[in-house]
Length: 296
Image (cartoon, rainbow, N blue to C red):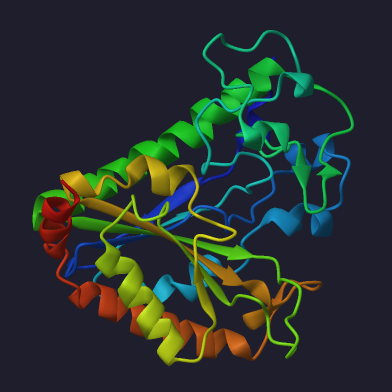
């Protein structure tokens, strides 16, 4: 039997809606959850600071101002180390579990092989989360009670925005560990834009994001090393008017990666991201129709 307390995060996520939705842009922070249920902590072999290495600390707060600017924000409260909603629903590693996985489970993906499936096996530098195998019912319970309700709510938010405006852009918001410095001691990348190599959104979206952030002094790259995860790939269907783009932010810009506390750069970055959000709100997504014609 699976004890309910393991999945007891209330609320598991929040759909923050503006008083009036003024733009066809939805923001999503799927990895900033930092509510670690006591029963989950009892299951794992790592301490809390180690578990938090997979957490996109503060990303929901960096983008929180979009709500007062007329754009909705989805944010998750349960931790990525417990359930990763940026994966297929059943990317599961059979080596982690006692009991038989469903026949439809994807056990052979590269993410599963790397320990980063729907129920992650590792955090950080391949640190094993668990000291023992879990029962398969536990994984399925987390998927049913956390993963699936989150995706139902996200789909509703995207669909409502699409109905209201005829187009919608999903901005999937993440952070990444700081990277090795370049010769001039600047981070190799401040921001990585992921659009699945041009397939998940109109090129106008990536061009705007890159232009706005470069103008504010950020080193911006596209698709390397992060081209966009399951959420960007799954929801980004520009031919139907649903665009999706992933934004990865170098944590060294805004936080101390050892203490998980914000630095003086947090407020600066937050203001720059709100300027970006306002620019995205003004972007005519119907340009995507021109992109569709050109792509045919």
